[in-house]
Image (cartoon, rainbow over all chains, first blue to last red; front, side):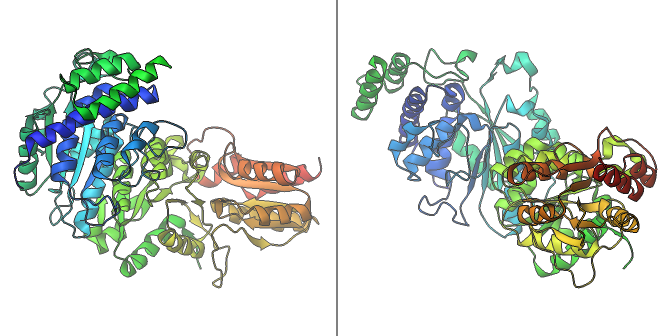
Length: 298
Length: 308
């Protein structure tokens, strides 16, 4: 695949961070930390790697994306809106009654979502099934699945990690599957290392038969290179361990478990957005800041 | 026709259907010899997937297969399959993934293996999900047609199958109709609604009662969800008394479903026969006697109910 336009993807991810903060502030609830840690990966997938057609969300030859850590779906909603699955102005309906932008992904309500997730551990199993189904159908489509590090404590994740490298043999090895770990080190109750450490995760994955690549999950060129490697790897699936920072881009949210599942107040949101976009505030971000400032005065 | 387990009829039907539709695949969790998909796996090795003893992963895998155009039958003992309710709830039901869930070894009739292997709560759990129909065939001919229906059904569906052999209760001309209860024996004094492995004993009970002058109408409720409200209310309206019989927990199964319909549409005296305790090890016939599911037990309960 051609080299990514890194500055463009970085700009998309930056806008994504702003929209995540905006959505969550309007909703008054949600998960900023993990949405901010995963957005660079999603920007790379949606705007450089994946084949899809927003006008035909069920197009048979599309690549599939499953966000197994479904609570971080605001990051995906932003990518979907920007890609044209639905209008950008619908983002602020997140978590509101009647909105297809459910608190966790709803496949039926929102075309373009491939599986309902958020009950942790399940999305990776579904992604494995999709990879197998596509192989059986003779499709060249790829399947990408993002899982969380806290999520990786689920037994069901390990069922899939055990089976995926072996499934489909000998004719349908799942080399169309790439699982990406958003390794931000924090889960709801605190630090993953303190609650139930995953280490040594790469050794475990290798022992299970996965091709493993480690990257900085905020370095788009690195992420893309890992996905290139995954695509070039034949005979089995690839696992990308993406080291990330929870709350990335907002100093007061970074590495703080408090921001796993708490929406910013409007004034906090404005502060966060100013940090993300820097000085001078670009013209596209000004209305968002104005809107959230007004929200705070209500 | 001789008695045949509905799991055996299912395994045979699937081989036939597999020849006609290459989208049909099976996923198992190390019980394919028991769920009877082993024959399918032998015939179509590239379309049968055994994930090992990992039922949650199996259900998720089936959802992914279904969402990419396959018609997966995800099979295990009913207790292990529906025991992974959370995966069924989200990855199958809420995602509307057209997985064909097959739970075998239902009820106390599995016998000696005892409670941990008995599917006794599966109907109750799955009834709570909005989009998963529940079908429990009563004999071989109905099973074959129910499996064919499951392939045609556009969404997810649950088939509830027995370990034990089932005596035929239908003749060769029988046509399974999804969502319809069929009258196996007409009568005016009491409606007995039974399902699956209890049908034969229920018919036997009706024959016993007939010798005492009680004419029982016996309905086979193969589709437990959606329930045939019209057929059930019609029968209940004529007889004025309803008894339900099932090899499942008395809470949340056929009896509960019928109670809900009658209470809302036409309150009618109702007696539910089912399993009121945990199951236990024992000879299947002895277990049916112990839980009041043999013909004598059913007849006795009906007699007492009508005389109350």
